[in-house]
Every structure is written in C-alpha cells, then in structure tokens.
Image 1 (cartoon, rainbow, N blue to C red):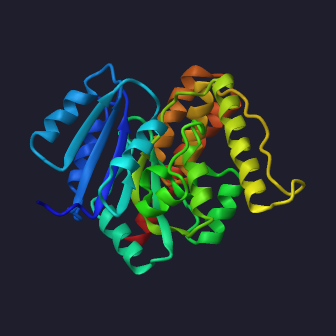
Image 2 (spheres, rainbow, N blue to C red):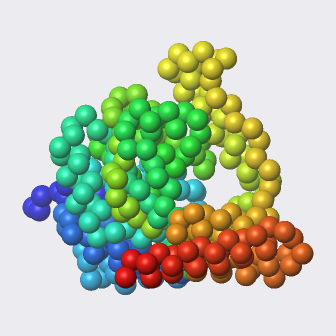
Length: 313
C-alpha cells in the first residue's frame, strides 16, 4: 500500500473550461511533487470535466469528483474531509500557481510549527491574463488578523493559501452558510488557534472577472461579511462599540471596473494593460473626463519608464 501524500490540493470548479487547463498545468508543474489533486466539479455545463479527465488519465495524482451545483463551500468542506495529506493547499480553476509555490509554503510550515495557514503575494490579472497589479498583503500574523477584522478578504488570499488540515478540522472546517466569504470566516477562526502568515514573494496569478457587480449581489455579500465580523467580535469579546461594521456596497458598471483596472495597472507598472482599459473606457465614455485622464496617465507611465530605461543604459 502506498503512503498517503503529504499535501492535498483542493480545487472546486464550475464552467471553467476557458481557464482550467492553465490552472491544472500550473499545479502539475510544481517542483514539490508529493501531493494529491482533488478536483470537485460543481455541476459544470461546459467541457470543464472532460478537460480534467484528460489530465487525470496521464497523472494518477488527479482525482475528479462530479456532482450537482451545490456551491463551492460545500465542495471545500468535502475536500477537507476527503484529503489524506497533513497539509492542504487551495487552488481556483481560473488562477495560475508559480512552480515553486508549494515548495516555498511547505518549507515555511515545516519551519514554523505555530503557523496554521500561510499565503503569499498574488499578481492580479484580467480574464485574458493581462497583469494589473500586485497588492501587497501583510506578512505578519497581527497585521493579517487586523486586516481580516476590518473586512479585507485579500489579507491572506484564499486561492494561494496552504493550511494544516488538523487546524481546519479543529475549528470546524468551512461553514456552508457563509457564502462568498467562507474564506474570511475560516481564517478568522484559524487566527484564534494559531498563527497566520504570508510569504513576501508573488506565487500566484489571481484572475479577476467583470461579473457579479450587481447591487443585489454586492449587498448580500456585504451582509454576510458583516455577520461574520459581528460573530467574530462576540466570540473574541470585542466591545460592540469598537467592532467593525462595513457600509453597504453600491452596484458597479463594467466601465467602473475598466477604470479601476486601468488605474491599478498604472500603479502596478503595467502601462500596456492600462492603455487597453483606457481605450475601452474611451470608446464607452468618450466625453467623460476620467476616460481621458486614464489614457493620458497610461501614456505618461509608458514614457517615464522608457526614459528610465534609456538613462540606465
């Protein structure tokens, strides 16, 4: 009988045919090889499952579970229950892990037994994998926990997280009634029994999509997050007057996302991405001042970098 792997990778997916091959290949290309890859299909109606089955035929580490659409939190909970590894890594079907991700995170957990979850920095990319920006996440436990308590779900990005499985079980696993914020809920509970950390290096490309921007969806997300924060404050004995309650989110238009991504790309040092979204915004809002401001800033960002390269030569 073969020994169980030291690491279990859990990846739910639904209708991810456009991206899942990149995600799977990035996991199979890891320099750390001793893992099982548990993939849960949440009732996909596209070719996602058949794509994964093709990889599974050639790599026995991949195990595909197919089911009806019940939501990611259910499959994440199932993944924790089925996992055989002492460590558990998360992955999303539209993201791309860097080859040394697992090796770096396993090494960190081996060297820091008090740590129950470790993440890393992520590069935010658009649906076509154009780079937008790297949002620096705090590296130390206290700063991560404080950011989570303020509602910052990116304080330890879920899709690049690696956990100790025993810690996940000790806090009761994922909770399926925390839709859209089951990761924040889990991390806040983990922070109460151990330490959280982020590595300083970028180890994952996190793909953003222009979906789920409607007012009703965003209001429901915010209500769930506020409920999690209130429960955490009560559990930790944080006085009600100091507990954080976040204001209600407004709906977003696609043009708002283009503007946000364009500005982020300028700050992140990716002028070509910024010019792409400035062009889209200019065609959609040709008379809006923000369209022209974004275009000028994107062009100037490129010019400045060219001058810096020329001066360095």
